[in-house]
Image 1 (cartoon, rainbow, N blue to C red):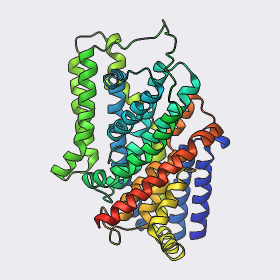
Image 2 (image 1 turned 120 degrees about the vertical axis):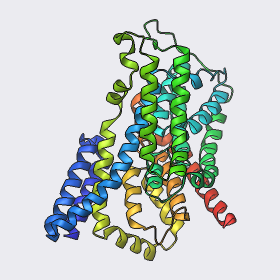
Image 3 (image 1 turned 180 degrees about the horizontal axis):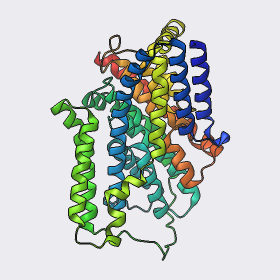
Image 4 (image 1 turned 30 degrees about the vertical axis):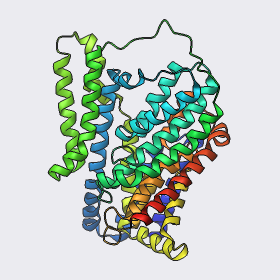
Length: 427
């Protein structure tokens, strides 16, 4: 039975990694894999009551992550529908490409730490289309945006799905991950940012031609500002809510979503249905990426079978005996995340190492948050933000590998070295 479970998981994992050439959505693969794994596990053991109880236990943990993601993604969609990000992007003004590169890099880094790396990438790449007329310039900016978004998402509990998983699972705490991983994350951005900005030194910004047919947002300046600060305030308050009440993060995000919903309804109650239809939270719910949500459900439930059958714990023991060094193991996991999705990697790692042996905020979990979050920048297919930018700007895989991958790799290794040195100095 164990051999069959491993074979099914490896095949499903390979199909997820080869989503684009196979032309089969990774969400479908994840669901099929989860279904097959639990079926084989139930039939193989014959202990249907026990397996059902374990499935219920796994579902509880999965639901917490899914509810949190639905709430956070909806809040971001509401802010975007009101063109709330204009509050930030309208302040980005410079005539030099190198100066613009520094500004975009830092704005993306800190915006990603509050939102998530996928949304931040979409916002910033879309902004570059409004600021830069030359496609070649936009490609370099897109590369830095991917690196900055992934680096920014790694050091806060709400900036990246994998960090959120570790936070909700109890492997890390919000304040500790912020103060421990921030320096490594900013270094992983500064190295490629400095090199790219130097390459663009002396070049001027070429503005795109204005499109007279562009549709403007119907929200007023007050509505844009209110929804932006309220939405971001709710996201930032979730860790505080968890700290004050001890309740899981999904409860805080759903509570905040209700507040945002009520404020939006009150603010638009005097408008006609046509004017407010695209601004409502109900519309935002239809725009969130449910495909990604379903993928998380499938992959987390699939990994749960390997955890319950002790396959992951056996793998952890093998890695310890073969490699021995924990820092090297985590760095390799981060490098693998450049090829395959980091969500199942982190989910598997959470099953490989238990909290009794590696308690909350230990070296393993903090370093895992950094490596899994930033390692995906090395290849454009290694992160959701990279895939999004690839679609928005039609970035060629080999162009990214030639121009950006080495910079991202050097930044990743530099940040890893900084974290390890910092940890040894402080402990």
